[in-house]
Structure formats: structure tokens, C-alpha cells
Length: 139
Image (cartoon, rainbow, N blue to C red):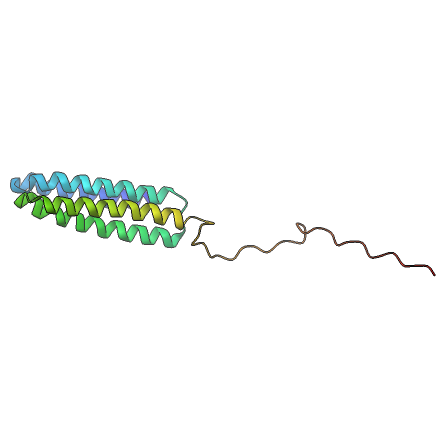
């Protein structure tokens, strides 16, 4: 998963920087979007290296991908109009993504609150020996 995330986000970084190099009006957007993609790459690698259940990896990876796309889209009006509300919206989305990914990694860890996998039953070797039978009474 680390290799795939690195390749996908690395290709996105190169494409964004290429757009900034070709279209000088979008150069500021290119730098901001490349920074956002690099931050999301770091979050993706964090999820890939922590012990997280598969469902947690899917949820976090999907949210990180959506957040990357929306953050880059929110940065476009900021770069073209210089209206700070777009930058505030993009930074807020990144902070929400950071918090959400950390919560997912905490809750979806093996043995955590969301781990409902069946636990292995106690083996006979691990069980204590049965008590001895009562001694017969002589009358």
C-alpha cells in the first residue's frame, strides 16, 4: 500500500507542478496544491504503516483521496481571486482530515473499539486441571 500511495501521490505532485510550470497564472495554485498533496501523501503513508484493520485502511484511504481532490479544488479560487475564505476552507478541510485519520487509526486498530473479530476460544492446554473427585466416606 505504501508503494501504491507513493506512486499515485507522486504522479499527482508532478502533474500539479507541471501545470504550474506551463500556466504561469496558476503557479501559486500549483505550489499550494503540491503542498496539500504532499501532506495527504504523508497521511496516507501514516495509515499504511500503522497497525489498522483493513476496513479502517479503506475508510481512511478513501477519505484522504477525496480530501486531496477537494482541497486542491478549494485552492483554485484562492489562487485566482486572492479571497482568503477559500484558503480558510482548504485549511479547515485538511485539519478535519488530519483529525479524522487519527481517530480512524485509533479506533480501528487491532483489539480496539471497532475490532469485533471473534476471539480464539481457550484451548484445553490453557485451562486449569479439573478438581479431584471427593473422597468416599467410610461408614
